[in-house]
Amino acid sequence: MTNEKKPWVRTPLVESANLSKAAGCRILLKLDNLQPSGSFKLRGIGHHLLSALKRSSNPEKVHFYSSSGGNAGLACVHAANFLGRPSTVAVPLSTKPFMMAKIRAAGASEVVQYGRTWKEADTYLKDVVIRNAESNGEEGVYVHPFDDPEIWDGHGTLVDEVEQQLEGMGEGKAGPDVMVCSVGGGGLFNGVMQSVEAKKHWKTTVLALETRGADSLAQALDKNELVTLPGITSLATSLGATRVSERTFELVQKHRASGKVKNAVLDDAEAAMGCWRFADDERMLVELACGVNVAVCYGGRLEKALGRPVRKDEKVVIVVCGGQNVTTSMIEGWRKEFGDLDSDLSNAPQMSDVPSAATASNGI
Image 1 (cartoon, rainbow, N blue to C red):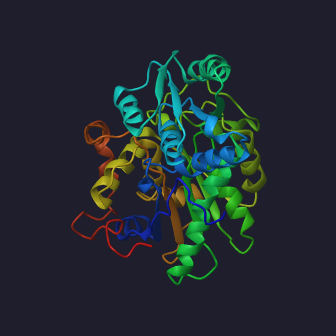
Image 2: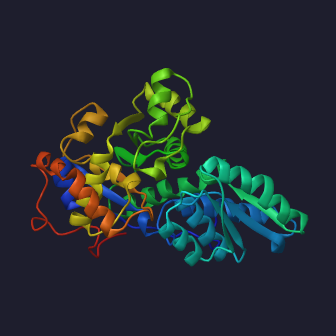
């Protein structure tokens, strides 16, 4: 990508002493929770919006429309504002009030509530809201939360940054041994995997994580075909795509036998544990969809997911994807509900043992 101004920012890559001690290897955190919208979504959606404006013959008439009441909707609003264009977000009636407030505060031109599910809100947005706007002379651009090649390309910039940052840290050109990312619809995974594929000198394994009850990828792999979940029962609603993208399934199928892709499913309780441990150890709040990536560092979960022992010197990059669907009271509630998981973290350091790496000044 060129040096033109972009809606997203380069985020730090820092080594975490706490998580490294817990996992038994070198854990590096790619802190995309520090994007202006609060999540990695700004990369892909920002790239998509930028590309749409370039294609338009009348960019001053472009109005962006998103149907996500979560991180994708927020990313759309932030990116549209950056590019000087209006945005409208349609959300189902079940959307939490504090997320509605965040979308409005971010600067959405309008927030439309409709339907019981995301699908109903999405259909209403495309069939009614955008058509009405276009009849009034606007150029409506629909923005899918994850399933678009331009979005995947935008997410791939994360891997390009990791490559540059590792070299800047004196780690050479070999790349990380493992990259960890969570999977909902698969947009982040697609971007990461495609970018890893393009780096022929890398021997990196991509570990795709889901939560039980939002595990459409794992169930598709079990049945050897794409499946649509009857519903989402996981608390990690940001992973709540009932069906992964075709490209996700294709990439996993292509690389699974060679070990270049691994996948695993953790429980909500484990994802919640990842959230409170990350808050304790690194002083940052992340939602369950991101906590699942952190949780894999504890209690031997990383070795189980990879199906092999880890070496002390191997580099594991965790995509801290972020997310706005979290508050301190939610973290406290999860800890009360699932706190017995702390008993299996005897190998984890106490907060006083090791200073936070993510808040240190040596990040790149």
